Length: 311
Image 1 (cartoon, rainbow, N blue to C red):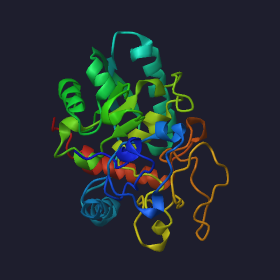
Image 2: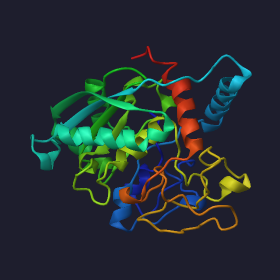
Image 3: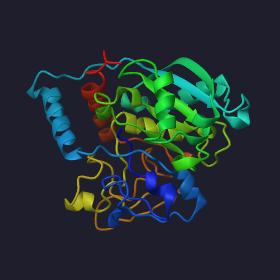
Image 4: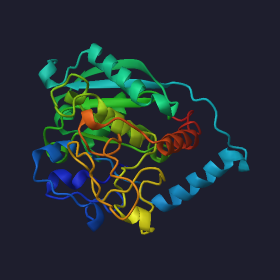
C-alpha cells in the first residue's frame, strides 16, 4: 500500500518529508507538531517507494505526449466521484453528512480544478453504519482494508471518497490521506481518498471546513506531491522536490496563512502558501500552478486511463 509519509505526525512532535522514509524525518522539512492546529492539518499520504523509477517512466511518457512518440494528450472526460459516508449511528455529529453538503463539495472541487481541465461528476452516495471503520480507518490498517474492499466502486478513472472520523488508533487526529495514481495497477482496491467528515463545506473542522481538504487529497490522487517536498534543496539540485518547476521552494509546510513567508530566501519567489498542496487554512488556498495542471493531466493519462478497464 502506498500512501504519503506524514503518518508519523500523530505519533510525535515531528513530521518527515514525504521524500523520506515514513519514520525517519529529514532536516529540510521537519516541522513542530506541538500545536493542535498542525496535528489536525495532517495529511497521511505516503510517497511511492521507488519514486525515482516512477518519475523516469512518467517523464518518458510526457516526452511521447509532446510529440516524440505515440502517446498524445486529449480532452479528459469527467471523473465520476463515489462518496462513501461512514457513520456511527446515523447522526450528523457522528458522520452522517447530508447529500446537500456532498453536492457542495463537488461544486468546490469543480471550481478549484476549473483551470486544470479536470472536471468531476457526483456518482453514487453510499451510507454505512460501522463504528469501527468510522473511528479507526487509517493507512495500512485492517479497518481501512475492510472498508475499501466492501465499498469501492468503479475503475482507475473513478474517484472513491470515504468520509470517516479518525477518532482512535493509528489514525487518531488525522485529517486526510490518499493514494497516488501509480499505485493503482498493483493495489486497485486501495485506490481513493479518505477524509474527515467534518472537513466538507459547512462542516465543524474549522479552519479546514471549506472543502479544501478534499481538493488537497485529490491533488495527490492525480499525481501531485506537496509543494514543500525537498525543502530548499529542490532548487539546489539535492532533490527533485515536487517535480513541478513553477512551484516556489519552501523549507517546510506553511500553516495558517502567513503572507510573504519566504523560507528559501536565496531562490526566486515567496513560499506558495496559496497552493492547494501546501498545509495552509482552507481560506488561504486558492490555486494550482500551470505546471501542476500539466503534471496531473499527464499522470491521469499514464496511470488512470491506461488502467481504466481494471477493477
